[in-house]
Image 1 (cartoon, rainbow, N blue to C red):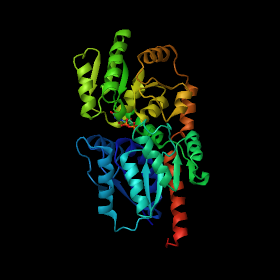
Image 2 (image 1 turned 90 degrees about the vertical axis):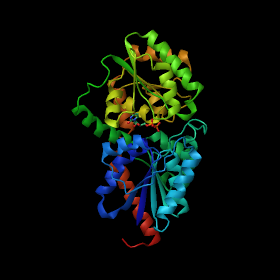
Image 3 (image 1 turned 180 degrees about the horizontal axis):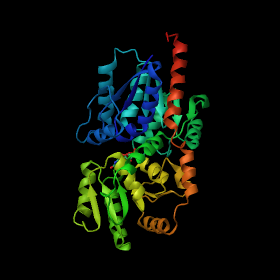
Length: 376
Ligand code: UDP
């Protein structure tokens, strides 16, 4: 029985790392190759290094200004050119990227079982986040095993008619990675962080580029005047459309704003932990910062992680200046209660998702083996 674990971006590598480790511990019982499509290039190298993930095949697909269509086309082409002679039994994909979608399509069309890690996250709006909501809904149609991070994700899948027997709530493997890397980060020194209290900013989503990004930067400028004791710390995504706007608004404000290159994962975790609060449109950051008790103002109209919102750890502000200002005032006036953070971590499986996912995957592979009558 042979399989592929396919990923291409930083968040996929972070969330698959504990599962790959779990599958490797399962030994020769699970025969698989780790394939990186290279959808992200430079920020991926940092992440692979942080986790010591050894990849068997890198398709080096990234090109400047690539569109989702190009990534999907090149990923399917690249995978089929490299793996068409392999008799493939299963593929594992994570999340909602173009790589995950193309990997699932490739697996399905190769006759392999498709397994989906981080299944069931939904905003129920295929335009937000675009194209990720569409990708994850499509992957759910093809998958035979759905590894859901929290009970609410399981409910979403059931509502879409997915057979409950094929859904397993294993927790969020991102929390496993986070805990491992935080221990490492805490051992190092943090004297590279800003000395002042700071707002951590990360913005990169496609639907926020252009006018919405400029509006948000304008709001951040207003926050700086409203709170003279706060500085902005923004490790900027490599997308040139983000960089141009960030430098246009903040390049000259060096006394109040620190702009830098993306941080490696352990350092970025330290920054989330140290921040007074975070302003972000990232999915993973909503989970991570909240797991460390740092609140997040979400610069999106909808989120697929409503549990953290219900717990009061994150709040949607969209592009609404008044709402951001009100949210920040509330974040600063009301410290996070430790039991709320514990509840959020417990909803995410307390850092034990990787081994649980690996155990369920091994069982699923065994089921496939028995159904096709393959030798052990
Ligand atoms: N991240 C990082 N360095 C940075 C910014 C983000 O390591 O400078 C990590 C972050 O900790 C999280 C992941 O990248 O685990 C989030 O990725 P991104 O925001 O690109 O994607 P999303 O989570 O929205 O899919």
